[in-house]
Image (cartoon, rainbow, N blue to C red; front, side, top):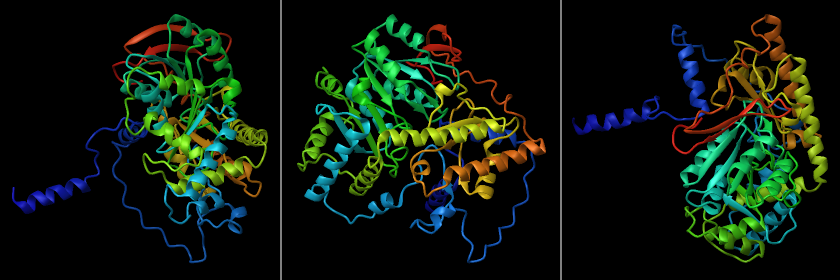
Length: 498
């Protein structure tokens, strides 16, 4: 092959739209399903490009924002994160460049850490907040690499896609994650968790407070009480990526050891910050470990002194933070804490009730049918029979000016939708985001029902149990007195994730 041909071959590889490796995500599963569904259909002729709108027209947006918001016109984003951001938060991102060890910035970082203590409701000076550049997923790596050692057993309470993913992360760091699974739309019962804790010692239990893939809410308070009673040495770790800022969390009162989250959901700050609150006991467990942390960037050996010094307003350096994101986070936290937290929780409960009531009125069913298991910051609901996310998401955007999310759970990705209702979309009285999305949902799904193109979603609800068949299955257990169905304890050590 000549040099010219070799170069063309290299360029063509960049132009090839086929993925070189299969990606194991729910989005890829949905994409493959759509591809096979259309394989027998002849290609459609290319569409004519849409006519350009008159120069005076604007994209759909919240009319109540148009006269006061400084943001460019855009569809209203109502997915379970990222969410809509307040103007003041975005304006904080435009802060001029400054040294990350300058006194003004260190003062801002110190203030932000102190505000996090108030949001998590901890007054123990020995607990420690962390703010590190990264996504919420980095919190999993921090927990795994700092609090666990080779072979440690972890009980993972599975309520959706992110239970599988957390277990996968734990396994990468040498831990032995054992999942206690419930059927899709449910959660393991307290009696099942108690039985699992009595069968063997666990170094840690992980709880997904709200699983973004299913909208299932876990009862963290009750679970923490159970762990302290049955297995007091077990660390209580909460994945709060989709709950912090929209669900109540009382870090000290409930006896939690770690709550990890991210900036772009209920907290209402652009993505890019991994946020953790670690208890005094959690810090001591880290300090008492017998082997070095199994990560360099995520090591608390590197970050713990930095966070302590920042909070004391002492310049320190390990890795460069993002000053602009820290400014935005401080602004958002000040807004959140300018009102009593209970007022915020009530606003989210009210908005959630409106959305869920409207969905019920249309005859649609939620993945989480038990009201006690339904999150207040998001709703996941089954689509009518024969309808896919691709059939309705464009219509919701075109007719209602709102952006919703398709399914995320790999087993049922193409059979349901998710709507986020958190942050300023529910707390800012000048916005009508909730009314806007409900109007769009009623219009689009009303047309579907009237045209007879979809059923009630009962067929879509079949086929997903969420029960894994891993290498080391313990006992199938019936949930006691609830609609949790059957849960299964599954070791994810080795084999494919479920």
